[in-house]
Length: 230
Image (cartoon, rainbow, N blue to C red):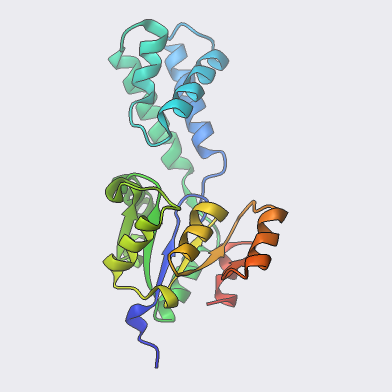
């Protein structure tokens, strides 16, 4: 008899539960536009190019991209321009935040099947909770485990092991659902779990690798197809 308490479904967030296609770029361009209109002495394309370089160097989870931008362009930090950039970016991004059409139905289905749900994310804990709260799906999840708190990013096994311990999950009865082959699927399998890839741009070489190695990784078109497997 299966102990339902050991069955955990872990989710990635961005690109898995919610549609993030182009929303960060749109928000960043809106922020840059307002900064340029208020005195940043570059045209909008140049300023956006500088911002992209800063994001590549600092990482997307770094919290002071606009601070660095003003330092690079002006030689000093401009608090007013930084505030304009940050507030515009945040407001536009959150306005565009939306779940995939079948996300809530899938969460309801999994709960009805006795699974406990949690998040494993390469990101900042408060930001991931904020997304779940804004989408009004936070009540489905018992925990959010992030690279920020663990100190390691997916696919490092440690983040999966910490998540399983936190949820008292049995890896053989638990599954990771995500959109990235290496970070989500391979990371989970290496931790003894199974995995489901959704909304993934997985390559044919990766598909062949899954078959050759007989990995416990399923691939579906979208999150609404999860109920055909679980």
